[in-house]
Image (tube, rainbow, N blue to C red; front, side, top):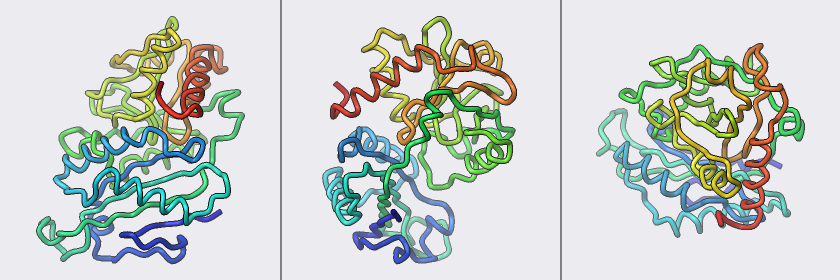
Length: 291
């Protein structure tokens, strides 16, 4: 089923959706976005995604032209027009600086553009969860926080795209990125966790990564099932010595990592910690909320 798209309130099939060439999101990559998915037809952790969207907007000095409630209404309207017939939805919300002259001056773009993309959610194949996946460590270094801060969920995704394309060429499900200090940071579209002695560790935000909503939620999930989840600076040797590893993202939940490059992680199979966290995550998601 193709996507249904709202561009500044006009909802059309994807083939009819257009945005002007002079939009600064197209010209300069000036914009932010959030990706959500639904469970039982409702966007999951919407309030947290909206909090992060507003933080991204603040960091690029972009005034969002809607309240959270207004955006939620637009999302529901786009989902209704998509007529998903019971399928769960993938939702992407994009806000750009807007249409203006060929200049970096924000005064030239007084009205932001708002795009909402809705299409059916497509989960990874069951084999990814049952056997785990192989990822690679990319040569592409994560953006330095003092250049393009990874805390901004920016439409300008060239850094991640280059690393993801390298992973594709090397046959990887995903690509792990290091920061400028050589520490493990995140994957191209996901956060990274390792497990050692039944404790789950994830790099701190200071390692140059996006504060993932699923990553954040996993601290609560871990507390509920008695599995400590902690931040810790991680390097290659920590990953290769781990008992387990997994990645998290909104659209893929928690996917076990069985192999990195040509090296096996732990037993090379999904481990008990990843399974327990995934089971509790799904229980909470399908029951309707964090509690």
